[in-house]
Image (cartoon, rainbow, N blue to C red):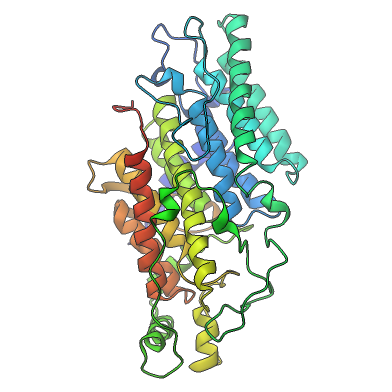
Length: 455
């Protein structure tokens, strides 16, 4: 895929400016209660602003490695959906559909609610709860200010009883979903992201540290409760190529392919590797990148509260479960990273294009999560072909040029290949990861009962 010229960068900068976190009143159009009081008659802008804020908070909060970030987005996305589900025609609550989630609070069908207000309250509350023990005072103040500013915009002309009822319903939704979140084995995992004590096996095929971090991230993450059991039970990878240090063996050739690729990378391939690096604490991680793409797509579509809430719920479930499934496989096989193998058996001076993250190789987390995300995007924005012309401006904030795509499947392939170009994954990690992610995305789209004809 090609990078864009300065003209397109300017356009991208303008679009990204529109996504910048802000509590200014003019950012959100007032949404008085419409005569047809359905969520499709409200703006989705407030929700998109919160998800942009999630990127900033994820990047700057200690303990939030990729699995922890995906989980936080997951529960925020569910809260956003459940806050407005009763305002979406023919929509069904995720209560009773998601693994372990029973019934949720219901609105009174004889009373009126402002879906913008219920959404505003529920999302703000859930973000606070997901980060509460490590969130910075600055970020907490931003959430509070955004919630207050949104409420001021959404309230004029609305009966105070409706306002109070809507706020209370948003709180009730968040309280219930938060209690659900505390039982998934990932609760407050950011306080102990390495899940110590953990002892890595010492066989020659096993992961060894590749940098300053000497223990792998979240070795028990695969034991977390997924939102859909099928996303883990039915997506575990087949065994990788048998490990061997013998020159000419299939495994040796997997490593040799990485070595040869890094040595012959083009400038474009190096740029792709860096573009998709998505390092935690420097960015908002792979999941955050994927959510930023969704936010941009929804912004360009001027999506309603209805479509925005459904879209984030789908991607939230997919990303959370993709990391659980991927991590379960990673710590079943605990496979050595290419750099460690190459240094040991091929070339001790070999270095990678980007840093190798501190966890086993098989399978690729990027490939899993973007494989899942690409299926969600395809379902939301295309006829099933994946064909969609768009430009990803989300990485401008980190100094990258925008990238142009015409198909979501191609974007996922580029993301997966980036780990090969970067020297940090074998090709088998990426191809298998994509298969797992795509299966998870398909599960989310087709097993759960979503409203049809969302607008």
